[in-house]
Image 1 (cartoon, rainbow, N blue to C red):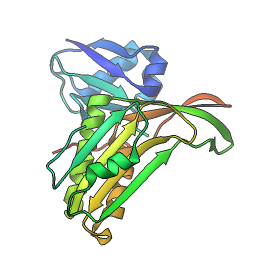
Image 2 (cartoon, rainbow, N blue to C red):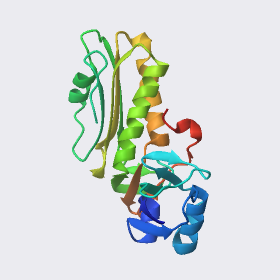
Image 3 (cartoon, rainbow, N blue to C red):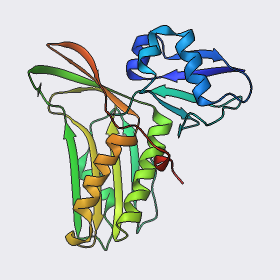
Length: 236
C-alpha cells in the first residue's frame, strides 16, 4: 500500500516538501514506516530516531499497525469549541492577535470569582541571539484534539474548575506579541486555578504539535522540544 505522510517543522525543511509517500506491505507497523522513510528519503534519516508519528490525529508507536487510508504525520517533539454554560471551554488556533479580555469573558460563569491567566510572548533576545520575529506552525487537527485533551485533564485533576481556554497563535509574530494563552476560572482562588493554568501551558508544550521558527541575527532555526510522547499521552 502507498502511505502518504505529512511533514512539519524541521522534517518539512529537510525534505524540501510538506508531504512524502512510501510503499509498505499490508499490515506494516510504524517501525516499518520509519525504516522505509529513512531508506527512501536519506535526508530525513538523522531525525527519525526522535521523530513523533501520528496516525489519524493521535500519537502512534512502533508496534502500531497502519491501514489503508490512515492519515499519517511525522514531526519533531513539540516545543475550538464550547462546553455548557457552567463549564465553558474554548480551544483554538488562530492567526489573529489574542484578545485576553474576550478569553476571560469566555471562561467565567455566574459562579466564577477567580480567573488565572498565563500568556507567552515573543522574546527579543534569546541568550546571545537577537530575535527579529517568530513563525509558528501547527498540525491543526491534532493540535486542537490535544488541546481538548488537556482541558479534560485539567478538569479531572481540579474538579472545581469552571472554564478552560487554550489558544495558540500560528503564523508570524513580532517581538512582544502574545503567542499563547491559557485561562482558567473557578469559584475561588484556592480551588486550583493557579495550578491548572501552570499545568495547561506545561502540558501544551509537551503534547500539542506546534513548532516555532526563530528568525534573527543568527539566521533561521526551528526551536524544538525534548519531550517524547508515551502511551500515557494518548487520549482515552
